[in-house]
Length: 201
Image 1 (cartoon, rainbow, N blue to C red):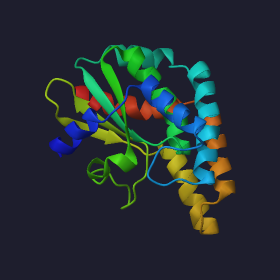
Image 2: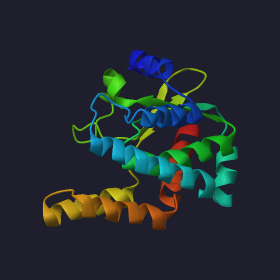
Image 3: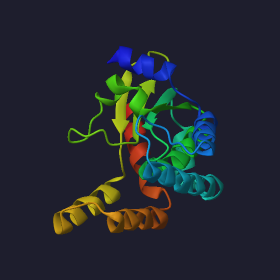
Image 4: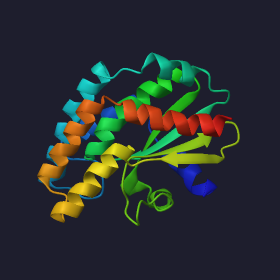
């Protein structure tokens, strides 16, 4: 566990470096990850636009800002992601803003397909769902907890859709993006903060 996390941290990128990596690959008509396809490149392009918008518009609520600043210890949030992932595009800008706001959290992003051993420690129902936020104590390097791949409301939305229609299709993906749009990052902030306060105390 500790070795996989240490390796992940070694291979990780700060937020802006991750954004640049995704953008540079798109210039070559590529996406991050071991698999390449037109679909994945198209998703990455769409996500790039989404993240640019969210970086500008995403706000941390005043109440959550106070909670973030009152964390006692320092942490690393190591996030497993890929440029083509729609959930990651919605969640990374929030996670980044929260880390900056706290002054106690260092954000690092690691690519799923290049870090198999790490990903396999954080499977969701045996699948490599991302993003996953891995919470590490900065001083000790100990794993303190993890969160992801989606806020509870988004998980429920997809589960209900799958129950009714048997698949996660483009309609489901559109519904999910609309859910994120209306939620404005509040669920993610609240869920992550609840977890952080538990860990910190």
